[in-house]
Length: 226
Image 1: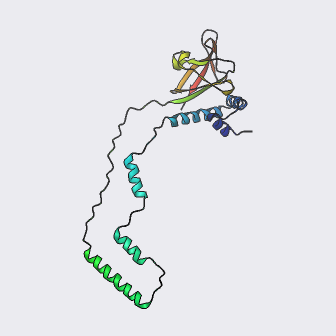
Image 2: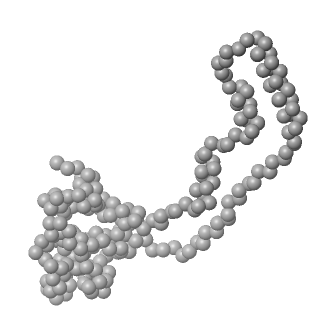
């Protein structure tokens, strides 16, 4: 049997078969804690998709390449490496003595010719950033509504959150006749109904609470909490 956490993840990834989707909705209907975990993960996914994508500037990339790339040795470092690198030579005593004398004379001449230099190292100063503190925004909870209606041609939802106008909140059809919609809501208590094919109004069969509408019917009740 699939674990609840894995079942929620596969549902969010749209990786369930129609039979597994029905099993998942039945499990959500029977377990309020599972339904709360599902809605919380829906909120995390929706908020993550709204995060800005940071693109590094060309200046940052160029500075990064300079810091990552190995430094290019100057002529003095190359000379020292050439002199100190161990090698295998075929030599005799007279040739070795001559080579040592030539090396000493060359190094002494180079040291005499080298001018004194003062190297100025630029210091990068990070730009000052000022963050404007705006007014505190009201928290938003993303609620996912699901209805299984394989024969329906269209499904929408009408409720307190959209002025009871079903045209403002249509649901999308997925495999197996599943209709879904994710809507942002402020914390509170809402009544709503599904509208099938624009004419048939039904309460949400997965709702845990209903309320009379004053005309002999019942609306589904949704409590949104942080």
